[in-house]
Image 1 (cartoon, rainbow, N blue to C red):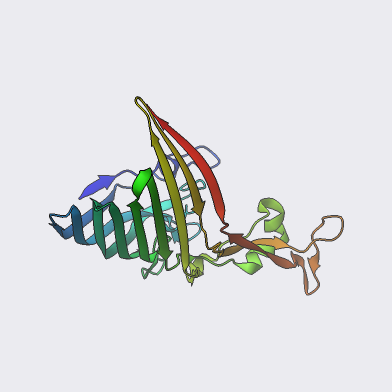
Image 2: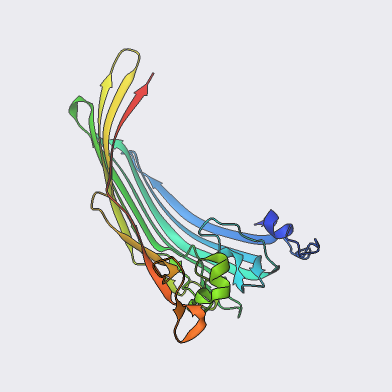
Length: 279
């Protein structure tokens, strides 16, 4: 069990007159319980099974946007510069299976599977999926060393898809909002109610090592995402514009722009060649 102060952006938040508004926030309390078992064989392999439970208390809750600070920050922006109260609870629980085969008969491998649930309370006190609720995560790495210092390896990763918050279309397309921030506004009443599709990726690598008296040369070919898997993330919010780049008003209500969504696709095949010199 440990306690942690909120971030400096929370503690130092002030109003227009310079008054600190979050003086009443308290330490966030986190309790961890982990139970596991490990088995080691005589063939350089280890198998571990662990179950875990984490409980969060007095987590900062954004009183303006009505959302736990645990559910923001996935985009690595500034988090906490708002009015908060230390009244939010959360939890994370699940289990992990891990297996490692160290080099044995020129073969090695790693296997890891995690089932996790991560939840924090919404404004009504109901536990909902947090931004870190990845559910199923699988990683498999295997390799083999061949004659004449050749080595080949492969890595497979799978994720069942993380949650995300949809846009508030009305607030996002309102002219007085879009003209200021020029991006979509989250609908925090539906926080993390949507979920991305599953993701997987396969990487391969081939190494050739040359051993000299005082140094070693390693030349490798690495191909990430060899299946060229594409992942569709939440589309970017924008508005329809005319030929001059000006926003087009909604014919039904001139206070709004016509919303537009731009596909946000990630993932590409990425080959690379590298050289490693060791003395």
